[in-house]
Image 1 (cartoon, rainbow, N blue to C red):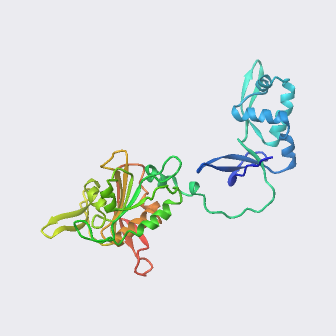
Image 2: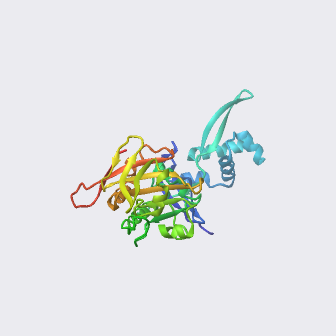
Image 3: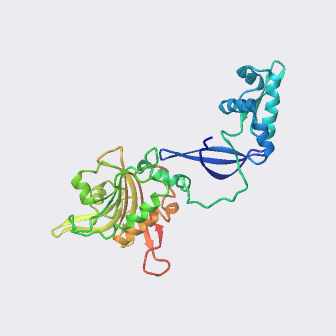
Amino acid sequence: MTITKFLIIDMFLSTGRTMTKRLLLREENNVQKVKEIAMAESPEELRLILNDLSWKILVLLSEKEMYPLQIARELGIHEQKVYYHIRKLFKAGAIAVTKEEEKKGATAKYYKAASPAFGIELPQEYRTIKKLPLLSMEEKVQRFFREFMRKDGTFEGKMIVGSPTPHGPFKTSARDGHYASHLTFFLGQFVKMPEDFAIKLDVDVKAEKEERNNLILVGGPGTNLLAQEVNEYLPIKFNMQPSQEGYLFGGLVSKVTGCVYTADSVGLVAKITNPWDSAKRIIVVAGNKAVGTKACVLALTNFWEKALKNYNGQEPFAKVIQGFDLDGDGKVDSIEVLE
């Protein structure tokens, strides 16, 4: 006999009779699937189910709701025999009445299997496991990153950080690329790692012409060339003015409120349509300075409930974020949404 092993997830569910319901988690080809399982908690429940004819009736009722006469016709047996096994299954909590109808002057009760799976559980203690990725994250976060997940849950896109060597019109060296690590830890809770390396430098994306992807841009236009190029498409833009010395950087400017945000600890979390491919999306996590980028990464990870509070799938989407050092250690550890 071959026994297939599954992971059973405890749930706060019960049938209204004796069987407790849980979730049965199965992984096939790196795809996780779940369905309910009703747990038998006594030998009596098992005895009432473990009969060839009872099992055939239970299989029928797992496919559709039926009344006893229908079952008898389907199986080619006497109706009274069906009633006998129906009473046993109902007593065990394996089936439930779904509706009643008048048929030829009598009331016909329709039955349906109480669960798509049944199991037994011995009194052994549960062991602690890592948090399940597909069940650990709120729907709003997954909706924000929806385009970055394939149907099987694998990450689809590229995360772009600025080159650590002097580059671009500002001739700057990025010092905020390591903040992407915190973001990838967060994404790993509900997205599977892709086969291809997903982190790239901005200069490599330009050279390899990989702009037509779902992109997560970490770092502002001063250090990330891709952030610089999509700046004109952002609902709240970074103010960059050309001059004889190159570009002058003047913080974030809001068209809606007219506010200008120049503090180093201020940044932008935004989601827009990819201008190189309208079927793709770009998420921008960028600050006026490196500390502002860190604040935005924290906003999307530790404080996503605050940052995405009003996100309902609309595009473009943008929030101005400011980071704060609440514990006085000189490092940003909290955020506020300014706009």
